[in-house]
Length: 84
Image (cartoon, one colour):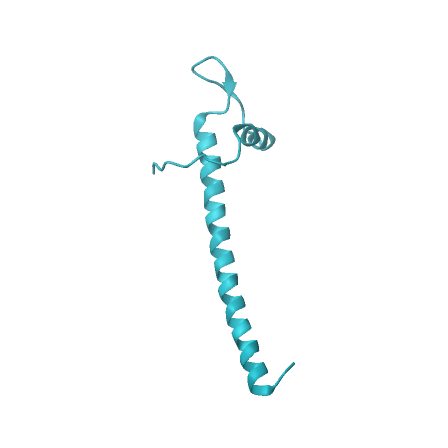
């Protein structure tokens, strides 16, 4: 699967590298002779961040819906039973 992952306001390469190294990833020699993570590691990390953000948005949306339902139920109870 080949998806373009936006990089605006994303986690920095430095942060990705720090986390990846902490979890056992290794630096590899790149075509320009520098030592770095392979480019796909950065793409994968950004894709994971985007997926996590999407899941969190869906969870928030569901919580808002549930809150609205509960609010309506409380209002109905107060109106019907004169609860203060």
